[in-house]
Image (tube, rainbow, N blue to C red; front, side, top):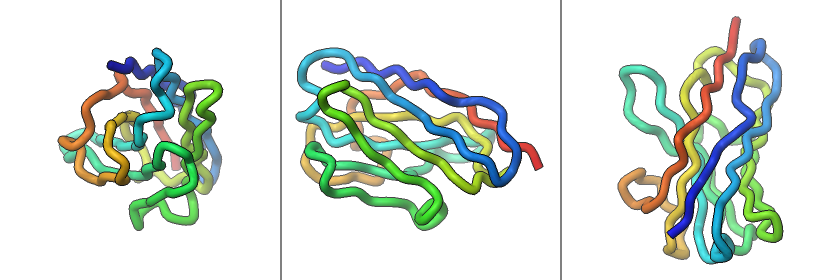
Length: 124
């Protein structure tokens, strides 16, 4: 089992940047594929980015490709989401999630562990 804690959210102006962090407990972080999701009020949880166990392979939603970057540091048990060129429509609660599988999955129900989320608000 792994516990996840997100941090780094906040209020930022449109065009600005934020870096989210997700710290994982335990000694098995490197055995999990990780994903970042977000959920805005009244909307379904949306896949943003995923990274495989080694960090070599990544995948992105079209809505964030070229603006967001996912990366991980297995020595620090942490996965990050660098968000640039933020837009008001990026406003949401952002979650990290873990799955023991090897593939980058885009469906929320395929992930076994979730953090509590961190709020990101982008003002226009």
